[in-house]
Length: 166
Image 1: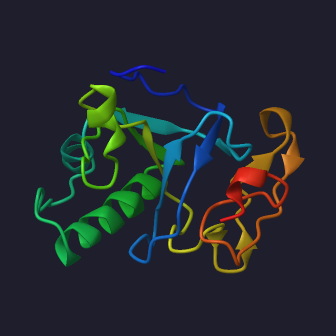
Image 2 (image 1 turned 120 degrees about the vertical axis):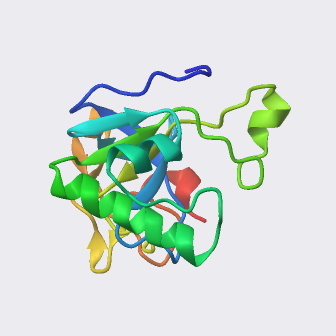
Protein backbone atom coordinates (compact mmCIF):
# COMPACT_ATOMS: atom_id res chain seq x y z
CA UNK A 1 0.00 0.00 0.00
CA UNK A 2 1.21 3.49 -0.73
CA UNK A 3 -0.13 6.72 0.74
CA UNK A 4 -2.80 7.93 0.63
CA UNK A 5 -4.33 4.66 1.74
CA UNK A 6 -7.88 3.55 1.08
CA UNK A 7 -8.37 1.17 4.00
CA UNK A 8 -9.69 -2.37 4.00
CA UNK A 9 -13.10 -3.80 3.14
CA UNK A 10 -15.26 -5.31 5.87
CA UNK A 11 -14.59 -8.88 7.02
CA UNK A 12 -11.12 -9.32 5.54
CA UNK A 13 -8.09 -10.69 7.34
CA UNK A 14 -5.08 -8.34 7.45
CA UNK A 15 -1.67 -8.71 9.03
CA UNK A 16 -1.06 -6.34 11.92
CA UNK A 17 1.39 -5.33 14.62
CA UNK A 18 0.91 -3.88 18.10
CA UNK A 19 2.97 -2.91 21.11
CA UNK A 20 1.26 -2.93 24.51
CA UNK A 21 0.48 0.57 25.73
CA UNK A 22 -1.00 1.30 29.19
CA UNK A 23 -3.71 3.74 28.06
CA UNK A 24 -5.42 1.43 25.53
CA UNK A 25 -8.47 0.19 27.44
CA UNK A 26 -10.84 -0.32 25.78
CA UNK A 27 -9.54 -0.43 22.24
CA UNK A 28 -6.35 -1.91 20.83
CA UNK A 29 -4.45 0.31 18.41
CA UNK A 30 -2.82 -1.70 15.62
CA UNK A 31 -0.91 -0.87 12.47
CA UNK A 32 -1.20 -2.74 9.19
CA UNK A 33 1.94 -4.86 8.92
CA UNK A 34 2.13 -7.09 5.84
CA UNK A 35 4.34 -10.07 6.60
CA UNK A 36 3.94 -9.96 10.40
CA UNK A 37 2.33 -13.40 10.56
CA UNK A 38 -0.36 -12.11 12.94
CA UNK A 39 -3.80 -11.74 11.36
CA UNK A 40 -6.79 -9.65 12.46
CA UNK A 41 -10.26 -9.81 10.93
CA UNK A 42 -11.42 -6.26 10.23
CA UNK A 43 -15.07 -7.29 10.73
CA UNK A 44 -17.56 -4.46 10.32
CA UNK A 45 -15.32 -1.41 10.04
CA UNK A 46 -15.55 2.34 9.55
CA UNK A 47 -12.78 4.15 7.64
CA UNK A 48 -11.74 7.73 8.42
CA UNK A 49 -8.95 9.95 7.23
CA UNK A 50 -8.09 11.40 10.64
CA UNK A 51 -8.86 10.88 14.31
CA UNK A 52 -10.85 14.11 14.34
CA UNK A 53 -13.19 12.70 11.67
CA UNK A 54 -13.73 9.58 13.81
CA UNK A 55 -14.45 11.63 16.93
CA UNK A 56 -17.01 13.70 15.00
CA UNK A 57 -18.74 10.69 13.44
CA UNK A 58 -19.16 8.91 16.78
CA UNK A 59 -20.07 12.10 18.68
CA UNK A 60 -17.01 12.11 20.92
CA UNK A 61 -16.39 15.51 22.50
CA UNK A 62 -12.77 15.60 21.38
CA UNK A 63 -10.01 17.65 22.94
CA UNK A 64 -7.84 17.16 19.87
CA UNK A 65 -4.97 18.01 19.43
CA UNK A 66 -4.34 18.12 23.19
CA UNK A 67 -2.47 15.03 24.39
CA UNK A 68 -2.37 13.39 27.80
CA UNK A 69 -5.28 12.26 29.99
CA UNK A 70 -7.95 14.02 27.91
CA UNK A 71 -6.97 12.37 24.64
CA UNK A 72 -6.90 8.98 26.42
CA UNK A 73 -10.50 9.62 27.55
CA UNK A 74 -11.43 10.54 23.97
CA UNK A 75 -9.87 7.35 22.57
CA UNK A 76 -11.70 5.25 25.17
CA UNK A 77 -15.03 6.90 24.26
CA UNK A 78 -14.29 6.37 20.56
CA UNK A 79 -13.77 2.61 21.03
CA UNK A 80 -16.83 2.28 23.29
CA UNK A 81 -19.15 4.16 20.91
CA UNK A 82 -17.93 2.23 17.86
CA UNK A 83 -18.41 -1.10 19.67
CA UNK A 84 -21.91 -0.08 20.82
CA UNK A 85 -22.83 0.62 17.19
CA UNK A 86 -21.79 -2.86 16.05
CA UNK A 87 -18.33 -2.12 14.67
CA UNK A 88 -15.37 -4.45 15.22
CA UNK A 89 -12.80 -1.93 14.04
CA UNK A 90 -12.06 1.62 12.99
CA UNK A 91 -9.42 2.50 10.39
CA UNK A 92 -7.48 5.73 10.00
CA UNK A 93 -5.83 6.21 6.62
CA UNK A 94 -4.37 9.72 6.92
CA UNK A 95 -2.73 9.47 10.32
CA UNK A 96 0.06 11.98 10.90
CA UNK A 97 2.36 11.22 13.84
CA UNK A 98 5.96 12.27 13.31
CA UNK A 99 6.84 11.62 16.95
CA UNK A 100 5.89 7.95 17.23
CA UNK A 101 6.27 7.12 13.54
CA UNK A 102 9.16 9.16 12.10
CA UNK A 103 9.50 6.91 9.03
CA UNK A 104 6.71 8.68 7.12
CA UNK A 105 8.77 11.85 6.90
CA UNK A 106 11.88 9.91 5.87
CA UNK A 107 9.84 8.18 3.15
CA UNK A 108 8.56 11.54 1.94
CA UNK A 109 4.89 10.86 2.70
CA UNK A 110 2.66 12.86 5.02
CA UNK A 111 0.85 9.83 6.48
CA UNK A 112 2.01 6.85 8.44
CA UNK A 113 0.73 3.35 7.83
CA UNK A 114 -2.95 2.41 8.18
CA UNK A 115 -3.94 2.59 11.84
CA UNK A 116 -6.60 0.10 12.95
CA UNK A 117 -8.45 0.16 16.26
CA UNK A 118 -9.75 -3.24 17.39
CA UNK A 119 -12.61 -1.78 19.44
CA UNK A 120 -13.40 -4.95 21.44
CA UNK A 121 -9.82 -5.69 22.49
CA UNK A 122 -7.58 -4.18 25.17
CA UNK A 123 -4.29 -2.77 23.91
CA UNK A 124 -2.68 -2.40 27.30
CA UNK A 125 -1.96 -6.13 26.91
CA UNK A 126 0.29 -7.37 24.08
CA UNK A 127 -2.22 -10.08 23.14
CA UNK A 128 -5.38 -7.95 23.43
CA UNK A 129 -6.75 -9.63 26.55
CA UNK A 130 -5.93 -9.88 30.24
CA UNK A 131 -6.08 -13.68 30.11
CA UNK A 132 -3.94 -14.38 27.05
CA UNK A 133 -4.78 -14.29 23.38
CA UNK A 134 -7.84 -12.43 22.18
CA UNK A 135 -9.94 -14.47 19.75
CA UNK A 136 -9.51 -11.58 17.28
CA UNK A 137 -6.06 -12.80 16.24
CA UNK A 138 -4.92 -15.75 14.13
CA UNK A 139 -1.74 -16.95 12.42
CA UNK A 140 -0.89 -19.18 9.43
CA UNK A 141 -1.85 -18.57 5.81
CA UNK A 142 -4.67 -15.99 5.76
CA UNK A 143 -5.25 -16.55 9.49
CA UNK A 144 -5.92 -20.27 9.13
CA UNK A 145 -4.50 -21.25 12.55
CA UNK A 146 -5.16 -20.25 16.14
CA UNK A 147 -2.80 -17.66 17.59
CA UNK A 148 -1.09 -18.64 20.82
CA UNK A 149 0.27 -15.32 22.04
CA UNK A 150 3.12 -15.15 24.54
CA UNK A 151 1.93 -12.58 27.08
CA UNK A 152 5.44 -12.11 28.48
CA UNK A 153 6.44 -10.23 25.31
CA UNK A 154 5.80 -6.51 24.77
CA UNK A 155 4.34 -6.95 21.29
CA UNK A 156 1.49 -8.90 19.73
CA UNK A 157 2.81 -12.28 18.65
CA UNK A 158 1.69 -15.76 17.76
CA UNK A 159 4.52 -17.63 19.46
CA UNK A 160 5.99 -18.98 16.23
CA UNK A 161 6.30 -15.68 14.37
CA UNK A 162 10.04 -14.99 14.83
CA UNK A 163 10.05 -11.21 14.40
CA UNK A 164 7.74 -10.84 17.39
CA UNK A 165 10.11 -12.22 19.99
CA UNK A 166 10.73 -8.77 21.49
